Image (cartoon, rainbow, N blue to C red):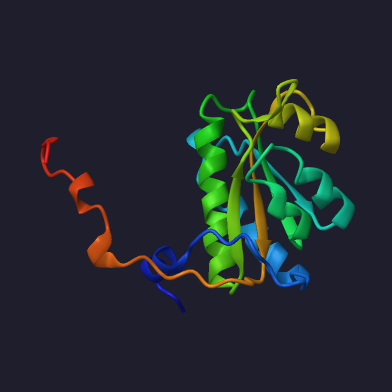
Length: 178
């Protein structure tokens, strides 16, 4: 079993995937991990849309002018949503669930990349969220946070080097300018 520290050290954004399906058992394990995510007041506001259909992945790849194109060649995407009427901190709750899915994917030998949707633009006429809402028939009370692309990596990324971490960002007892 991989330690959480090792998962964090080796989890990097992967944007190139092998043309290989992600097994249903792994998809279930990834989404079940998200269902165990903590949420404010146990409001459980998140919802997930699993996309494997190639045509829909191509359409989703157009949700932003940049940074989403890799979805067209991804074997799997998970759209992370949350019901804004259930939690005033839905962004945080959905973010926790999304990173838990990324860590579970990493533990299963898969790569992933977070594609930000909330607060982003498809083009000058439409937000990424509006585009995805229309495309996937998402009701208005749900906010779309991100899309996770997931698949078997077709690229290698070096793990974080502990000695190169920005340890000056850690403060003890009080904030100290360094």
